[in-house]
Image (cartoon, rainbow, N blue to C red; front, side, top):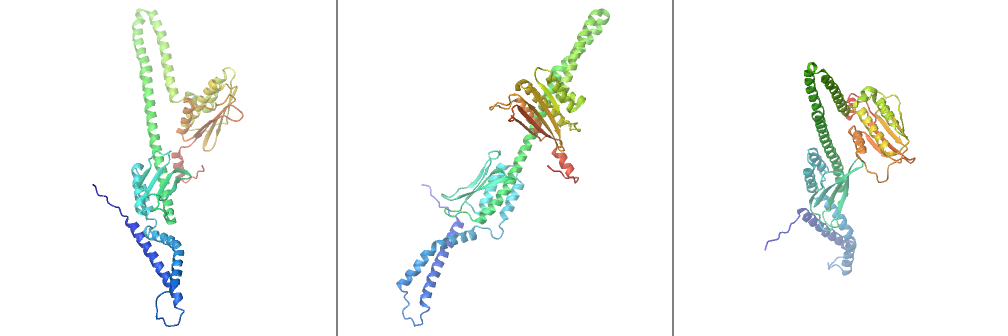
Length: 429
């Protein structure tokens, strides 16, 4: 039969011993004090040193009446003496900060951090719960005693919840002291900053991966278009030119017919080249500018039956190329949605440049969005184009009816803002 060993916590043993000694000393002091008060006023010589029974009863009653509050007071003092770090109360903060600064993998750092907190504060159980929006797993160390109170401290960053820090009391009926809770709150603040940093790092890595994937997908698409579309057309033109050269002297009529076919093939090749160029950047932006390109698209849509599209905008300043492409694509996609699905009679496109951003609104008087509408490819594409630049996108159904598509596109990237601010310029966001 295997032997069972009893685990003894030296801190609990020390605190229990000190508490018993304090209570015994208090009882002795009270008893001696009561007896001294009753005996000392008497000036007659004592031949009998036995304490009367009624005096013992008074002393024991006084001890019993005050033992519970004294016990509670002594528990607090003993816990502070045994467990608290009076010499350097923020030594734990320094250790936690050192671990968080070298955190490269939260899945490894959080368990080690919970263990550090438990050892430094001599806590039987410490857990770090992460918010569901984070990709990190929760971590825990130790086992909470039965019926011991567990304190839950929120972990946040600028009012954004990051999770919670859980710490168990050292024994049942003895909650953590205020100094322990104050120290744990400081740890929770440090932890919130670290978790937010880890979240931003993960989001940055995800964004980089998405950019790489999008770039490679675009390269593959262009390669396929060139290889499967334009390359065969050019090869065919080369063969036709060779055949036409041989026919010029022998059969001029067939050579002329071949030239006509060659002309049509050249038109097809030119159209293919224009399509490839349009997918990279709409030529209308270079020819007409953003405002002219949107007005051209609005005019084409207005040529249909029953839909009138107008563009309201002041003269636009020079805009970054990325902002022009994103604004044009969003406006173009929104116009297609209005034309196909809105059943509208009127649509107004508004462009309003500001100091730091460009606001684009497309409003129609159609049937609006259905209550159970889900974002399709068009809405997702518009949202992605805005978010790629760090902007905002929203679509709603105003109270007056119709649909409102609103996009805010920043005119400066964060890198540009950081570079200008380093030169001494102050920016107001």
